[in-house]
Image 1 (cartoon, rainbow, N blue to C red):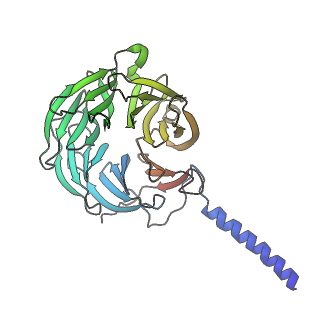
Image 2: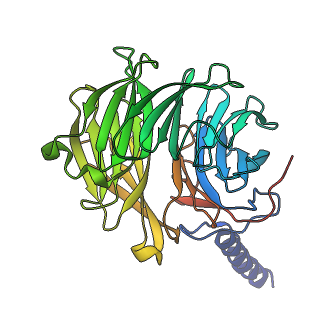
Length: 368
């Protein structure tokens, strides 16, 4: 009996361990079970940005703030509604405990997030002196707004009283922009991608008198500039997604703002709409076929800019990507999926199954 009992116990132990492992494993692309304590949203997720231990999530009804100190266990810590006339938050930027946001059109907001548990609206104007906001970036005392068809520079040094200080006519649609300082020269540049006008680099070191230092008017270098859809700038390189042939990602060396050059390309089958970069990884959001199939996130090794190498593809929700944000310190990608919520993909150093998935479906948003 003792031998039979030992073998039976061992068998039961093996079965129990298999059940535990099966229940805890996260399959890439599938939403794992979560308890009611995890963050849920009651509206569409339209955009997301990450700063330190917090993710700022733009919703169709305002903004939510997540504590992502442990990114696979996000916690909702604060929410704030949008304007009465326009609740949407389609784009936002973070700078020095301020969130600068817009719901599109002429809306413009500034929110104090120095206490993420209690964000405070400092300025909210549904009819600011803008017309069609597509994207926002912020650096120092200024916000840079892609306001079709112009680049608009806004002084936010007094966040309760923002003031437009200059405009630059880009002569084309402006879907996206980014801003960065050249650490060698100390000059600040805004990098714009515009449909029908390609890549433009604007020197905004003097925000009152921005100067375009390089327009994408060389078809040999730029190709069809009308296909550029998104941009992220890091360490002297611009990562640009393309929504039409050739679809995919092109990396540009922008270390010399007056002579930028494409140095590497990664092609996708369908239109690429969103891009994020963190360290030696770029993340590219590719549309699903005819909006009827899941869109995909391509993880790309960009250590060698001339030889971009795909290292993984993750299927997401049906449709197209609303927004991507990557965190180098967390090793995670945050993907806004509209009605499907927010998904967080972390690499193998953070979670056991690369990429693991945190699925935040749509239910009630906490208000405290």
